[in-house]
Amino acid sequence: MKDNWNSKPDNGNSLRVKIHKVIFEADTPMGKLFDELLIVCILLSVLAVMLESVAGIRADYEDELHIVEWFFTIVFTVEYVLRLISVARAYKYMTSFFGVVDLLAIVPTYLSLFMPGSQFLIVVRIIRVLRVFRILKFVKYLNEADMLTRALKASRRKITVFLFTVSALVVILGSLMYLIEGDENGFKSIPDSIYWAVVTLTTVGYGDILPQTVFGRMLASVVMILGYGIIAVPTGIVTAEVANVMRQERVSTQVCFECLAEHHDVDAVYCKKCGAKLD
Image (cartoon, rainbow, N blue to C red; front, side, top):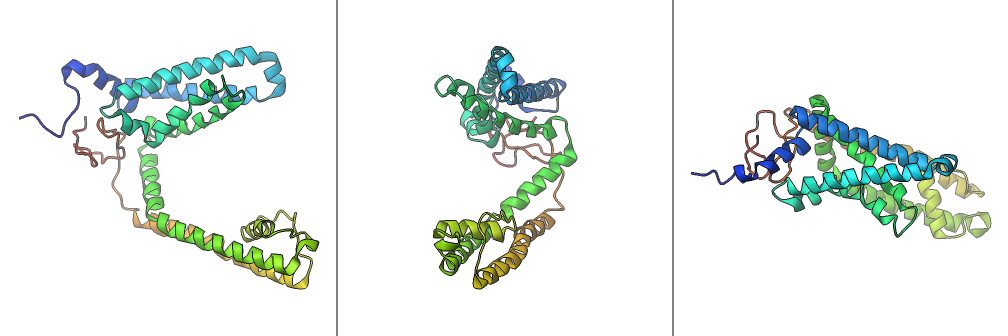
């Protein structure tokens, strides 16, 4: 009986499987070579965009830089199309994190035909280099990245509550400072005062707005001291969650053909999300 969990293409569509292994996998020589060349192209394309932003270089090599930019854009466009046709469910890839990044990596160049200057958004391609940890089979880095991701997901509700609390606090503190100092001392509005509260609470202290009255300075001192305590809160939350996932199992570089799920156990036979059989 045919395995219903395994919906990979049959031999007639084996080309899709081969393309999938080269593009999405890093366990084969061809897959590793492909991704290494891809990273080189990404870095060179980002470098070209950065050089184009330098007026002197742009004046001397503008045409050459445009040719390089379009060359890499075409390469990445072909790669993006191959990724779409080499997976069972294209929309899964399109809506994934790297799927969105891959699309954003090619859109700015085409957009520049109608909106000059938008090509500088190409620097988003540098995010694609995050694949280097999977490509070079740095399994230890994969484990650490997976652990950090799980810790951040587990702490997201606590961080959200924390951010809402801090947001309410800066509104209250900014409003108090506006009432104490007023327009004559540089606090021209409540939004300006909230800006001061954010800068002070985060201990950045630009110094562009300063309290002049005794009560204003007393409140500022309280906000500064409060800021040191608040900064430690998110660090403690994430650290606690990291400690909870320290004993996780090792993960491999396998990518599910069906749902594109990653971070499977090294001895996994089936995808942990959709149940499809792994190579």
